[in-house]
Every structure is written in structure tokens, then in C-alpha cells.
Image 1 (spheres, rainbow, N blue to C red):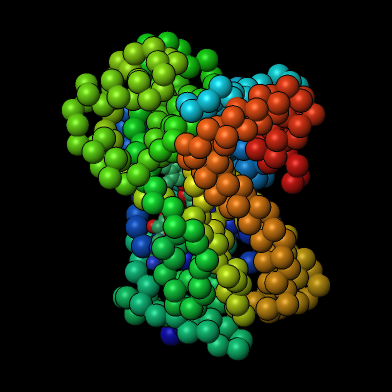
Image 2: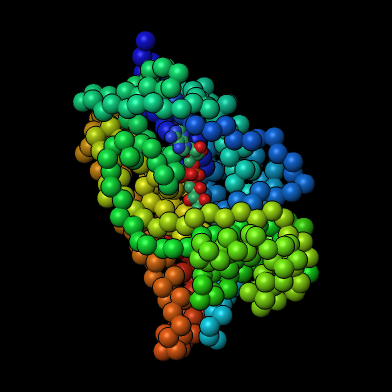
Length: 397
Ligand SMILES: Cc1cc2nc3c(=O)[nH]c(=O)nc-3n(C[C@H](O)[C@H](O)[C@H](O)COP(=O)(O)OP(=O)(O)OC[C@H]3O[C@@H](n4cnc5c(N)ncnc54)[C@H](O)[C@@H]3O)c2cc1C
């Protein structure tokens, strides 16, 4: 027996789960299946912090509010950041973004990924239109003219008018659909950990550009900071192998002791960094969202925010198509989503690649221009406000 749904979402990470909740909120009689290979740990100990955190923009916050998860996220734990300070280790350039300049209370929130996932999973359980298969392994997929068929490893058969791939950077669905990716050779990895610093972080997201890559200190509660240290894969490996005290000292030096001594270090983990975009976001009866469609460097904290912007656009495209009595899996309908999101995502991808190269250069002429650029931008208020608006996701509202 084949069970049919309006839509099947593969991947219930932050992006796929938000899409499921958003579609269920928008359409009362819409049937949604969500499949994820891995069951997340929802019963964690809140004494420590998740090593993975995300800087969530105001635009993403609005989406979370609309689908009814924002209160549940804030009731767990969030850290608003009111300032952002970026400076160049190889020159004299620096730039400071202050939420007060925008008349806003904050620039966004640093939130542990597990907090977001837990709130989304709880919301999924409340929405009767959603059926969750998790943990569930996919065995095969077949794209037909009228519907897409999926078979799980336990032989459960499902079909849908549209299948959405939200299964992350190594997307199985993208590979099955034979959609190629165009990427840049990045040769970078991110070391992540949580530290306590001697001086308070002042609710500021700090980022120092080193020639090896950016080093970010993101503010958490109780004076803790989440670290994202982008560097070469070999260096990241070395940094995870040294003792806690040696690491604390190297980290403090790399950060020019901006927040004083590093008083404690939690576990360290390394994530390979990728930068690519798929050549197509859609095919007949298939759409890709989030990291499955585009994966960027974490230096601007925009990866999941771009994925959530994909979600908002796809929900609009699907609801408009249904209102016009159109087939939601039709390529013409889906192309509207692709056109909408590709330009925004590509400009962010190119900007991230450019920044990485600009700050990676040791040429003195480039260093001079870099400092000049940062300092001039810092002094031109309208330009700074424009950058801040974009970083907060407020320009796409
Ligand atoms: C170090 C680091 C720091 C970052 N910091 C930020 C930040 O501050 N702000 C920001 O916006 N972004 C940040 N990002 C990027 C952000 O983490 C990603 O963009 C985001 O996690 C992508 O979400 P997603 O739901 O698309 O994919 P994922 O989070 O990868 O979720 C994919 C889901 O699909 C499931 N899955 C995978 N394969 C299958 C399969 N075959 N079948 C079924 N299910 C499957 C997985 O179990 C998972 O639940 C950072 C990334 C890194 C590496």
C-alpha cells in the first residue's frame, strides 16, 4: 500500500522542520510527511551549552513567531546580541555595528541549535497535518509525471505531489535527482567550542579576521561565549589535539586578549567548511531548500537564515499555486521559487568568498585597502545601516 501526501519533506533539521510547521500553519487541509534519518537528542542537560549555535536574524525570528515556536525557544535559552565588532588582525581596520544606531533593541539572537530543533519537534507533534517518520532511512526514490514515490528501508511506501530536500549539505535527495553543484575550493574547517572569559562579552558578537580565517566569539548567557574558529583543516586538527590550557592560551592570543583570559574550555569539535550552490534548486516534483541547495562559510552567520528565507518563499509559492488551483509539483510553479531565492543566495555566497579571500591576503597593498575600507564604512552611517539591515534580514521583509 502506498500512502499519499501533498508534500514530503526529507530532513527535519532547522530548515525542513520549519517548512513543515509553516505549511501546516498556512493550510489546514494539507497533508505533510517529514522523514529524518536521525533522531535528535531532545533530553539534554541545560548545565552545559550546545557546541553548535546559530546567529538568528530578526527575519528568521519573525518566521519562528509566525509558526508558533518563538516563545518556546525563548523559554528555553537565547542570548540577544546588541553589538557586533569586527576587526582585522593584519591591519588597523575595524567596524562596529550598534543596534541602538538602528533604533533596535538587538541585532539578533545567538541560539543553540538543539534549542531550535527541540521547539520545532514539539510544534510538529502538535500539528495534526504532519506525520513524522524518524528515525527512518530512505531506500529509493522515483520521479513520475504525477507524483514522486519514496520507499523507506523498512519497505514503507510513500508518494507526494512534491518532495522537498532539506537533508543538509550532503543531500541524498540532491544526489538521487542528479543535481550538480558548483563550489569553490575552500580548504577551511571550523573549530567550535564554548568558553568562559575573564571579561564580560558585553552582549557583543566579536569577530577577528586572521590571515588563516575569521575567529568569532558569540555571546551566550552567564558570560560564556561560543567560539567558531575558521582555519585550515590541519591547524584545526592540531588545535583539538593540544591540552585545554594550551588551547586556552592560543585562543586568547589569537583573539588579542580582547576579553581577557580564557577561564574554561568545554569540548572541542571540528566541522569541514564548504561553499557551493546547486545548479538547479528545482526539478519537476522536487525542490531543494537550506544547506541542500547552498552551503556557505559561517563567517557572517547567515547559513540557516538563508535556508529559513528559502522556506518563507517556498511557502508563499505553494500557497499561491494552491489558491490558483495549480499543481504544486509543476516545474513552472517551482521555478518561481528558484528565481526568487537564487539571486539572494548567490550574492551572499559570492560575498562570503570575497571576504575570505580579502582577509586571507598578506599583500601589504591589500592590507592597506582593507583597513581603509573597514574604517571608511565604519564612519558612513547610511552605508553601515544598510549593511546592518541586510545582516538582520530586515531588507527582505
Ligand atoms: C561551525 C558552523 C557555524 C555556523 N553558524 C551559523 C550561524 O551563526 N548562523 C547561521 O545562520 N548559520 C550558521 N551555520 C550554518 C547552519 O548551521 C546551516 O546552514 C544549517 O544547519 C542548515 O540547516 P538545514 O536544516 O538545511 O540542514 P541540517 O542542519 O544539516 O539538517 C539536515 C537534516 O536532514 C537529515 N538528513 C540528512 N540526510 C538524510 C537522509 N538521507 N534521509 C533523511 N534525513 C536526512 C539530518 O539528520 C538533519 O536532521 C553554521 C555552520 C557551521 C558549520
